[in-house]
Length: 300
Length: 300
Image (cartoon, rainbow over all chains, first blue to last red; front, side, top):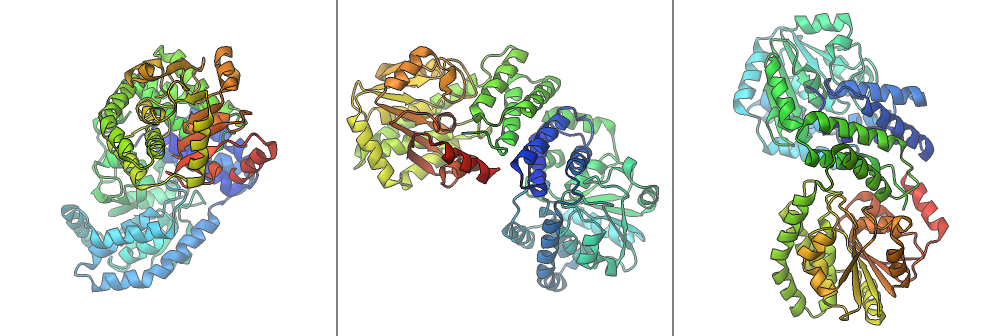
């Protein structure tokens, strides 16, 4: 997906949040914000937002020498999600449709995205879970997803954020044992999950965890490691969590890929044709060039 | 008030809104957004946000040749407010405290600020009125304001936005006849009221209407005309409506000035020490340098 003009004010807000997590000095915060503005003024909008995010956060890292300003936030999110896990696990077990319930909770956990909402609270996460308990996934899409999971021998699950990956465990536990590999980011970027978070969430005890070989807050295949790309191409089924993965993979050529996410901003909701806040299970339609062009025109 | 770092993402959103009102061409919208990013990257944050707004919108005007992209929005706001006026006037007349009720409605109308909220709806305005009907102004501040109005022979009322000035009429009608002069902007900027809007609102039939001599979305005294500055300095009482006037006058030296506004963003709410959405009547404390410095440190 291209970067829409509406993404730009959001980038600048994200840069400011990151700057504040990196330093208490107003002077350096201001310098970092100015750098972000200059960077954004030269950005190619033809590329997906995570490419800009990657450039932006790399630049802020260079300037401050701090690799991981969201580390504390990620730790807190993991710990909070782990406290919620037993209750959610019980709800999944007691559900008439454990896979459907687990998919809803995995999607509910996608609210933990500090790239979209900087001031996220525990109450926001609780509200998202409550919406998942009361709400429904689109029945046909869920059924399609269920069949895809059932018939795939080799599932590659692209994780999104720290905290959220604890919720992902609930869904992965409903999949055939031994079938799933989870991919995390190779390095810290915003609050995206890395191997450290996968370990904290207990995912490494459950399945094989690999990394994408890159630190874009999404999956930019051209930047991923050759070994990751081989796994991606070979996977019978790819499950891509979150907005960043949707933004970077919605034009890819994988024939069996599902996006699971909460549509958290107007741009994504419009691109997906859903409401902001909606829980989405969407089978990937293999890239047709005219499709994207049309969407580009309608939004900008 | 200085420009806080939090103002910057908001500027960029405002530039995008203005770009979209100026052209349907995505290519030109993108150029205008890039211009705004470059401009913002070089901005002095020591100056109030309306200085940036003035520069930004002047640049967009230069690039597109369009003087007034918010004209239709301003017309709609005036017409909508005029439809609400009779009912609100009746509520003021029937109130036990007509001045207090009119002040609340004038402040409720300050919600019509397209610099803060681009997608404002009629329902937002109706909600703001309902909050005014149910809510209260700080009693001591209102009493202080009442006495100031009563004892001033010469009141200069600095209007803020189109539509809002219809609500201002309700308050001005409660002031001693012949005592009030209203100042509007000398040229179009965002949806700030100009003479055209004052005429549409019926203000020109009620009081003398002058302009500030400038088009900053606030009152930057150094940029205002000499005749306006004389009126400002000589006025027994200045009533300054809205965030832009607060941002530009909260360090001025006028000894008898009240700010009337709805605190619509976190930056202003924090600077004023109130909640976002709160209706504010605040007597201006004549500028003390240490006061502003402290506020600057706490927010950035």
